[in-house]
Image: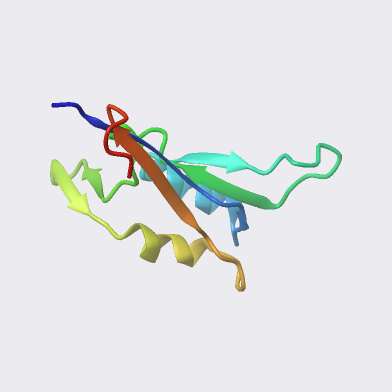
Length: 103
């Protein structure tokens, strides 16, 4: 039996506080994407990937050092609090099990 291996990323959007957003990403093993479409203009839009998680899927739990166990969390409920009003975050994920079962 093969393992499912995937890729997950978001679109680009504006956040209220970039430093707080980076801290949140790091605490959830997520990687920052910066929109560098125009090298002459610094971008205020960012995105993120699940590149650091097992198999590339969006995480649903986080390790708690104090309790020494995993805790469930809701990625979307935590993410929307970082968005500038009017911004939309689109979370995409695809993957396959030995190219047989693409999801």
